Amino acid sequence: MAFNDKIAYVMSSGEGEKSGIYKTTDGSATWKLQYTDKRKEFFLDAIACVSEKDCVALGDPIDGKFLLLKTTDGEHWNPLPSDNMPTALTGEGAFAASNTSLALSGDDEVFFGTGGPAARVFHSRDRGRSWTVVETPIIHGNTSSGIFSLGLDEYNRVIVLGGDYKEPNRSSRVAAYSLDGGKTWQLAAQMPGGYRSALAHVDDGRWVAVGPTGEDITNDSGVHWKHTDSLNLNAVAILDFATGWAVGPNGTIARFVNHYNYEIRYRHPRRNTRHSASTIAD
Image 1 (tube, rainbow, N blue to C red):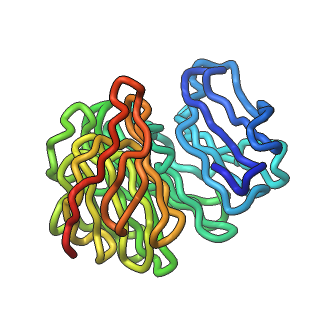
Image 2: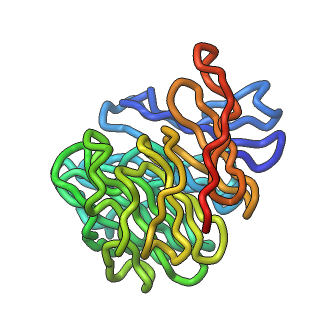
């Protein structure tokens, strides 16, 4: 997560010390490890920031509660109190596939999505002092299914995407939306084309989704999704209406073009041909 050409955070995922939060202040010439934990249960899933000095990181449950770390100075990270957080279900966790299972809104709101035995959304209005949790209709029931990506906008609309990464072509119950800040949920009337690992907000009600079987776009905040591309992508970030980037396997980097499609800008040397996906009409 970069803030300018000098300052950025990087989060790694894995058991124990394989998970860590790093920061650079010199354009990646050097990196400082700011937080890690030796416990095997420690597993980071996502990091989100309001500003360089106001960030939250999400980790899988330890002693029955999801771990949330917070920095208020950009240097030191401390666990948020979990006393009032609902207990995680046995086997419940978050997914680290795209760094989008966690989202922040303003100075206080925190949302994160889960998977495994349930596909739930946890929500705090006071940066972790109190919590609510709601089940969503996203497919779940095993360790490879649930919510992989969560996004929200300024109009109290929340979207969740996911599915089962072991069944990437399965498109039933992979997208849902809420119009009341996550209190109630509806399945999308028209689903994306399969399991989707990440979504990103473009503008107004327009969002893009990416996954191993292709990309989709919605113009109505997640009610209807339309297939736009067939690239194998895992994560996406949108800067503005015309600027965005996505990444995929084998070193793939794709640029968001024409507000709908992706153009391959780099691949592993063995597959370094460039091409642009076909244009999709609105």
